[in-house]
Length: 448
Image 1: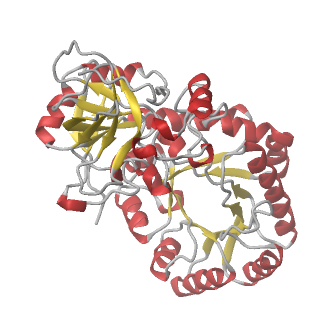
Image 2 (image 1 turned 90 degrees about the vertical axis):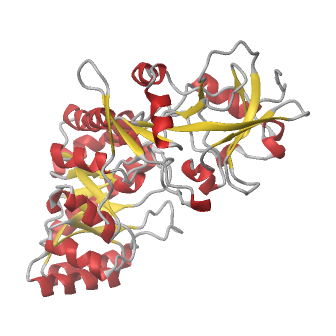
Image 3 (image 1 turned 30 degrees about the vertical axis):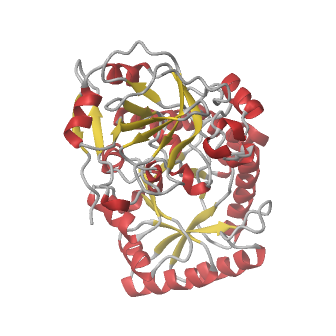
């Protein structure tokens, strides 16, 4: 039966990825699905290395001293931390568990940045002892850092986090008066005040660059007080470009409730910007060129720190589900049910939808006609929809076929996963694509 519902959503294919396509064209995905017996994630660590190198190359291009920290919250796999330890890349953590995991996989304490609000004393104690760089979010937290430093008998390394003037309702950072007080306390205490940072929502390079320039001025002010203040952190917020401009613009222009199962409604503002003309390293380049920021950094002798997460994981992984049911609806579209849940594609967490089209990998060749279908999870919840929109598949999916969601390593894989219904969490399979053959292994579990 061919279901070609005219209200199926406009296509939104991910950018072509020949390396991943070569893996998907072989037998490995089906063999892994059979062996694992459930959904799984594929990881490509060489992509992580390439993305990190691209950020560093932009710093070199502008002659700016800088350092990249991988924002660990973007994906819990140990593979990325192993690469950081081997390459000397930094890691950004926000909990005692993340800090233990980074240290346990060989990342040196001096290469770890500890962020997040109102950090627990247990986290601060280890961070001070290991020489981590601590982003201080509030005055009471600064007092606790100073107390930990006195107890440890060694100075704490800190950045003072600035409340963004353009986002005054942010719950992160200190205002002008609090920063004045913090500077005085740092001068009087045994603390190495290395500079400033901020937490800025959104992906606007212009806004990020202008706030960075303000932090450079704050560094000069702090130096006048005798403080070190030789670096600033601009956080993350480097967009990932998932799809082409033409597809994205058409999708936003044409999408409407009829394109979704049960008339689900999304507004353009509900979606991540799946197309970005300035993404990843190009966004960093835009930051550095705005208002001659690179020149200001060089002249002031200020190092630029950054904490990309999703951008370091661009095209570094995908998620694979096995189809275990296909239901035809008389309204002209089908419902495909897969062997996992929407908890493994965590845009649902934001009441949104992961938009790059899934790729159908048939277990057997089929001569059927195109088929429009949404994708549901295997739980007993009406809201467990992996994909609400009606995707146009080239042929009718069948039980045993695989659905591959591309480019899911940045946040989608595990930010919201749960063993609901006693369903096991999808394992992560690391692909080594060096040499003439592709080898695989299971990702080492993070330290408990």
